[in-house]
Amino acid sequence: MSTPLLELRGINKSFGPVHVLRDVAFTAEAGSVTALVGDNGAGKSTLVKCIGGIYPSDSGEYLFEGKQVSVGNPRDAANLGVEIVYQDLALCDNLDIVSNMFLGREKKAVGGIILDDATMEEMATQTLASLSVRTVKSIRQQVASLSGGQRQTVAIAKAVLWNSKLVILDEPTAALGVAQTAQVLELVRRLADNGLAVVLISHNLNDVFAVSDRIAALYLGQMVAQVNTTDVTHSQIVELITSGRSGNLGLPAEVLNGDGQ
Ligand SMILES: Nc1ncnc2c1ncn2[C@@H]1O[C@H](COP(=O)(O)OP(=O)(O)OP(=O)(O)O)[C@@H](O)[C@H]1O
Image (cartoon, rainbow, N blue to C red):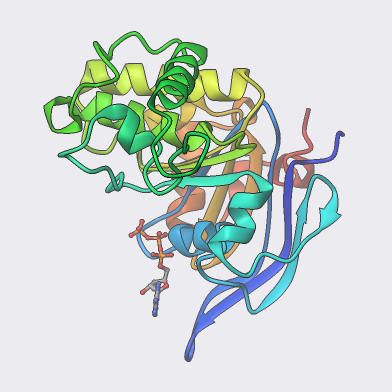
């Protein structure tokens, strides 16, 4: 098996007396979509925040491209090429698409005072084209005028603009209708097909089975399985999410560990 882009080993995280993540192992591979599933409170957001450096873990190893690294804050994660798209998207309604994509990381023209609009427009256009995004009419359109699916697209494009290697999407289809969900799932697939490692948090198992290569299931802060999507059924994943057990599901250890290829 090739070296995973991201590998976490034995991650623990507590908030005061609450032990939220317990010896969690997790991998994400370039060119793959890994769905992270689990019931409310299972620890998905906490795990993602540990990956993104928002919550440094209490113990455990963080390997990136096979090397052990220290990720103590979001800048460390961004420097590795890790980007998280949160559910609230953190877009500014009163700014256009280009301004949103470069918010806080604007390109300056020579001299460093004036913004380099031409370069930013070109980079935004190229990024959207690389993702085959055709749903946006103009990159100078205000974000307030975009649909939910288009906003999600802009947030994802913003995340991949910075030579990202790992993009984590938190419930990207939660607020979308059927057609927009299909468009966003296509985009998620394209990110992986372009070589990125994608982690998709989702409660929607239809989405998970439609787009993921692997499924990682958390139960009460423990990673109970990392499986290839084609090795499991909906009901087996539901059982893992709701009881943490694969018990009588007949899943051998190599399948639960994602090695069952
Ligand atoms: N900052 C915090 N302080 C104390 N407890 C926290 C904090 N953040 C999360 N927790 C607790 O950690 C547990 C896991 O929460 P987390 O948000 O990671 O779960 P989740 O799987 O993302 O859930 P959901 O699907 O509902 O978003 C919960 O019991 C939660 O109350």
